[in-house]
Structures are given as structure tokens and as C-alpha cells.
Length: 122
View 1: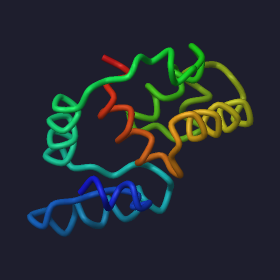
View 2: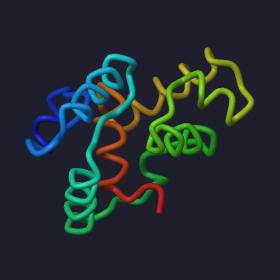
View 3: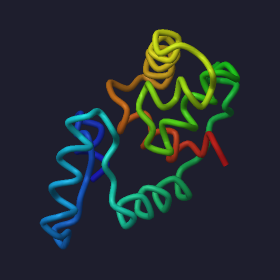
């Protein structure tokens, strides 16, 4: 699962999902939302517990980038993040880009996965 996400997968589902869950996941992934089943999230959290954690300061994420990352973990898209944080969508895009660069990832699901692995937001 981790390798698939690191390779750029937009999400991860287990084979026991219903047709309705699969259709919703496809729509969400197409909309840019991360798609992880609760079981996949639990598996990622278990992996995170087993890894050593570098200090968050070493990643040099700003407080606002952490806020954006927190909302990404909650599955919000850029427009929703902008509404929650009361900033423009272009500012959200700027912060998302910075988060990707600092975490050395290519996409939202990978950023969320890495943040969970590193326990950046406990």
C-alpha cells in the first residue's frame, strides 16, 4: 500500500469495498481528494508508530503550512481549505505546493501519508 501511494496513487481501497464505495472513491480521486479506507488509514498509522520521527522543525513547515496540511488530512480540497482558514484559493495552492516540496512528495495522498507516518500532527 505504501509503495503504491509513494508512486503517486491518489488513494487506496481494500478489495472488500462495495460498488457504491468504489464509485464514490473514484469521484473523490478525480476531484483531487485523498481516498483511503478506514482500514488503510489504520494501517498507515501502524506504520507511522513503527518509524522514528524526525523533528517537525527539521522539515521547516510554517504554522500556516501545518494548518493547510491538517485540512488536507481531513480530506478537504483547496476551496474548502480556503474557506476554513479564511484565505484565498491561490494562497492555499501556494501553501500546498510548499508542503509538497518540503515533504518531498508529489501529491496530496502522498503528503497525507507521509504526515501520518512522521506523526507531524498529533
